[in-house]
Image 1: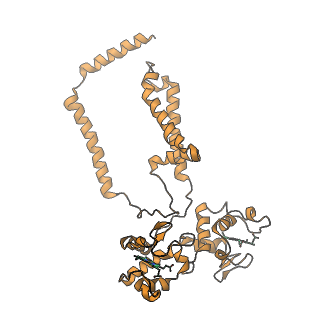
Image 2: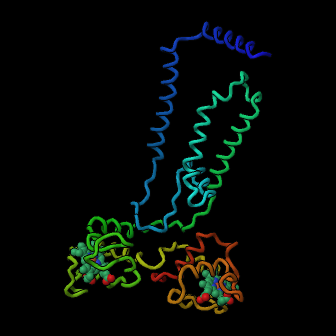
Length: 323
Ligand code: HEC
Ligand code: HEC
């Protein structure tokens, strides 16, 4: 079959359709409007019934957040993992640009008269590969392990954070390099000061630190409580989840004691934070042999997730354990 023949047939078919066709207005306009209305109603319905959750106030000092894009960007999130460091812009900008240019040029490249997908094997195969690739990357991105344990912030701590912003504490204090210098840096204050002192100091700074220039803010007891709870999360290695003690009891107390409870096959870990850092503890739980060739302790790389090991390490190193 020649190209001209195909063209003639297409032209004939076009004429035929045009003859029995309906005008753009009002028929097509009506159809389009109807489709738009249905989609709009669905979105309004979802917005009212399901809604979209907001996360906590963004915290520029947080180092323990698990950033995840929305599902429709998970493929890109996952794809970027194959392009380490400097190559990221290549994957994020160059590749998509070329793909879009290719799609724009496609009508000029693919001049074949045949329209059925089976008659266009190369482009159909490319299309299937692309869709499959997107699907696979989205799935992998969805399944990729979280590196930090997901911690739902305690409402009292969240309230303390809010007060910290509202009362402009950062005018005088800094946390992880952000804020003023009139007062001491609070980055690790949770490890330095205990609860009782903090509450006493918040209610009356001059009484706790004679001569302090920190203003007395006439806080309500529950406000002092909230600020204290927030201060106590500063320092240490970050918060651990309520599952950490349970996990430790299940996996570790047969050999290790902590705060007076547990076995004595391995060393007592109550004070491990005074002589080990988190990198060491994390790696030891993951794979003791990598840290100590004669280790007797079994590794937990296979049985615990990265987030669980991180959680255990923070629990062991926390200054707030047991409270
Ligand atoms: C006008 C500046 C100023 C403001 C505003 C201020 N502070 Fe202070 N703060 C200080 C100074 C100076 C000290 C050191 C003397 C003392 O212990 O009171 C201090 C001490 C502290 C300490 C003890 C730190 C340590 O290591 O001993 C904490 C905790 C603290 N402030 C928290 C806060 C919080 C939370 C707020 C907001 C509600 C706040 N501060 C507002 C000046 C300020
Ligand atoms: C079968 C017994 C056993 C179990 C179960 C076990 N450990 Fe150990 N662990 C040991 C022994 C023994 C050592 C001492 C060094 C060695 O031989 O590996 C040790 C050492 C350690 C150390 C290093 C201490 C240091 O100062 O060097 C850490 C941290 C630790 N264990 C954490 C854990 C955690 C967390 C768990 C639970 C997930 C756990 N261990 C489960 C036996 C065990």
